[in-house]
Amino acid sequence: MEICVVGTGYVGLVCGVCLAELGNNIVNVDIDEEKIKKLNNGIIPIYEPGLKDLLERNKEEGRVRFTTDFKDAIKKSTVFFIAVGTPPGANHEADLSAVRAVAKAIAENMEDYKVIVNKSTVPVGTAEMVKNIIKENQKQPIDFDVVSNPEFLREGEAVNDFLIPDRIVIGVDSEKAKDIMEEIYKGIARIDRPIMYTDVKSAELIKYASNAMLATRISFMNEISHLCEKAGADVKEVAKGMGLDSRIGPRFLQAGVGYGGSCFPKDVQALAQTMKEHGCDSRIIAAVEEVNYHQKMSLIPKIQKLVPDLKGKTIGVWGLAFKPKTDDMREAPSIVIVEELQRLGAKIKAFDPEAQETAKKIMKNLEYCKDPYETAEGCDALVLVTEWNEFRSLDKDKLKSVMNAPIMIDGRNVYDPKNMAENGFKYIGVGRGHYH
Ligand code: NAD
Image 1 (cartoon, helix red, strand yellow):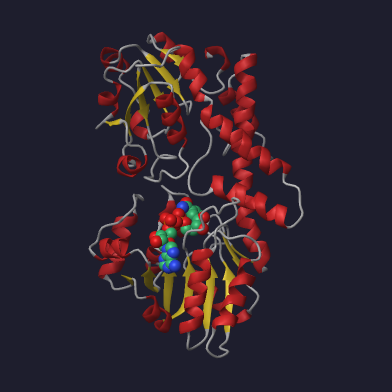
Image 2: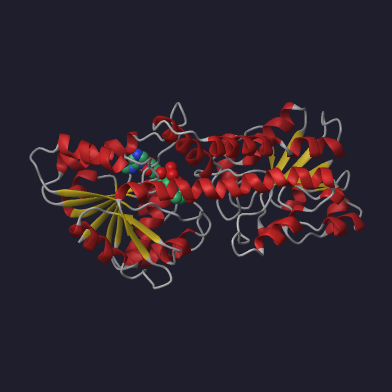
């Protein structure tokens, strides 16, 4: 059985290569000829730790191939994982045009039974939509099933997340399709990492509700961080104390510069739009997004507190990707922060270990540097935006010797404020009341 994975982005490529690793035969299809050319030449278009080795091995063993020839892939494949982009539309709803195009192409070219699996993040009701598109565009009635199998991988940890997931959610309403999905994933399922079979609509909603919950925790802690700053408490201590409660747990309680990336911002807004379409209020979700918008800007007054007039000053930015271990710049807080600093007249130097090439396409008027210390040279302040490991252990004396002034604004609470102060740094973090 050949499986076709449609889309070779952060999800499609990982999905294709990992399904091959599980012993399946994969054809990975994309409309982006450049991407397919690169992949056929052994070049991975994204930065994702561990993916290169896996890809090389599975390519060598003939379990994965890349093509733009979708028609041929439709003829040869039985199962289709749709992993195309679902970016925000005009009203922040998920733009499903790529999903629709894929469904139509499958319908027009199918000659036998197919299972179409929605892996892209799509609103509740999309499987039904795909079903209707296929029925309407088939040349003659041929049996098929549509399955919802949302993806929960995190960029930077994607390979492990795919191969050792917390859970696999499969929304399916046919025994035949269920058996096929079971066969595909049989190498992954464990007693403590189960496959959860459910109805299609619940599966679709599990993805949005999960992302919205994680985003809510982040916005909640960011809001608490403001009170910590005013009242003299330390949000890291507060988070630690909260996380010790087994009902709450320690994860996703870090205050910072707000969430970004290709998922949380668009998925939170798309869920709000879906709720609206269904006549439901979305007060919590609207607040989560609003808090996040303001949080991205919240570093600016902190920087101004230590560098009151930014005009003509040089600010170093450490980290540009929306989070460490990825080159993904979509909705990265760094974009908003850099733009605002530039608007206020600052000159920006920046360094990111992996996202620099992507960043250059988005942010042009800044000086990109080759390492953290070159970035710090001549700076009136440093701003840590993305907590790459490269920034964790500092040579503070070296930093002080190259900077104009020893000022650090820590958007991720990586450093110990007391230690920074003892080493002669003026320091502001997020929600660290004693050092605000
Ligand atoms: P991406 O933009 O990196 O990749 C999408 C790919 O689909 C691109 O290579 C594009 O060329 C291709 N494509 C678009 N239209 C196509 C078509 N008609 N036929 C074939 N290929 C087509 O996006 P991504 O980050 O991989 O996300 C894909 C989906 O997975 C989205 O719905 C996203 O919300 C969801 N998701 C993403 C992540 C993540 O961390 N990036 C995690 C979980 C779920």
